[in-house]
Length: 244
Image (cartoon, rainbow, N blue to C red):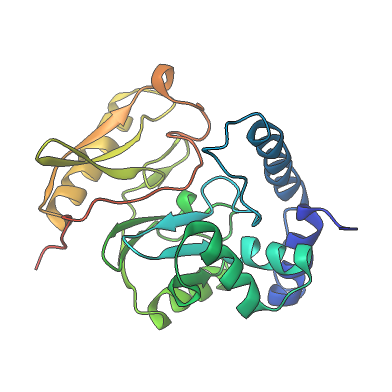
């Protein structure tokens, strides 16, 4: 393989975006290097673990009950690494995760490398989106990709992100018979940040009545202060419903 993951991601972005959008080369380089670290670690694991062929680094995938939403950076990196077309790349991703190729749903990156920095999969085919995920036309492409593939988009009404927090980078989890949205604390605790937390909690509980509460993880308990819960593949419970 004469090109690394980062180069294939850049090549894919240039093909999809043209010259109309800034391509953050340094951000991709940092993200792709994590994939190499993961490969080294994977080689130390027992035979109960496998190393994925496809570069689904960090939170660039959201998992449903029998499907996955994957960022196009990862799709195009797979195409470039293995010299295959989009259909074959989807089949490879599906094979890595034990699902059919038609259950792999590629969507444009919402201005950032990881999908989980801008969206959360709620239940079924409902996706919660940070607004705006990015100030250019790419964000509209992301939304169009979701809707064309049968997903319902719910916007956060400006409640999820600010200068020192990103509540969207969380996950719906179950504990006993209750469901919670787990996310990260703002980096600075103040009266203003507490008001933001209250507003976001009210928004989530109003939109998704099956949610018992929003739990904010303090930095000391977070795998990464910058990444909140950590940029990783995130899933969802099965009983979170939209308010009718």
